[in-house]
Every structure is written in C-alpha cells, then in structure tokens.
Length: 116
Image 1 (tube, rainbow, N blue to C red):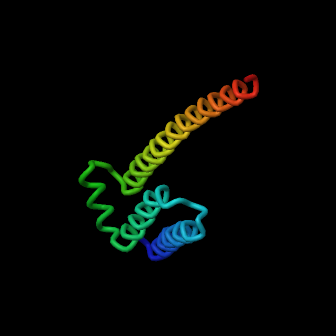
Image 2 (tube, rainbow, N blue to C red):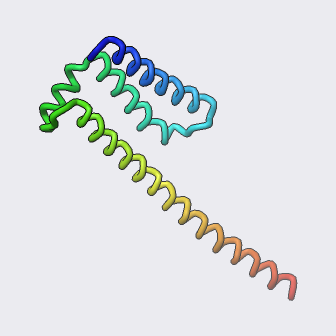
C-alpha cells in the first residue's frame, strides 16, 4: 500500500478508536454498543500497519482484490450492527408492553379505590 494511503487509513482508524473511547467516557455511548466499533477500528489499525495480513485474508477467502475483502467485512459489520439494534429494539418493545400493562392495572386499581 502506498505510504500516503497508509497514513490516511491509519489516521482515520485511530481517530475512530479515540472518538469511540471518548464517547464511552462521556457516557454518550454505552459500553455494550462500543465493543463492535472498537474491534472494527482496532482491526483497521492492524490491517493498516500489517497490509500483508489483508492480502493473506483476501487469498484465504478467495477474493480477487483486498478492497473486495474490506467491502465483504464491511457488510458483515453492518449486519452485526443491525442484529445488535434489532435485539435491543425487541427488548425495549417488551419493556414498553410490560410497563403499559402495569400502568393500566395500577390505574384500574386506583379507579376501584376511588369508587369504594
């Protein structure tokens, strides 16, 4: 990889890593969501420093170009993010349903107490 591309890729990957750590530190991003971003940026840093690993992975999965390998793993990354958010949305939907039922029961009990 040309030195200019290596510097740009490293700077971007390292910046993402630092931004994610800062967001977690400031409690703007929860730890449970940060692990995937941290692993991805660390992986990009490693692949930038050791480009031969990317070429080896490209060879192992049967891709023609290293950019194809990066796009392949980007798609996997996006699928993992979607799965993670789907799990979280499902959990929140169940919590909203349970809270709604509890509020309805409490209101019904209060109405009964007022009538008696």
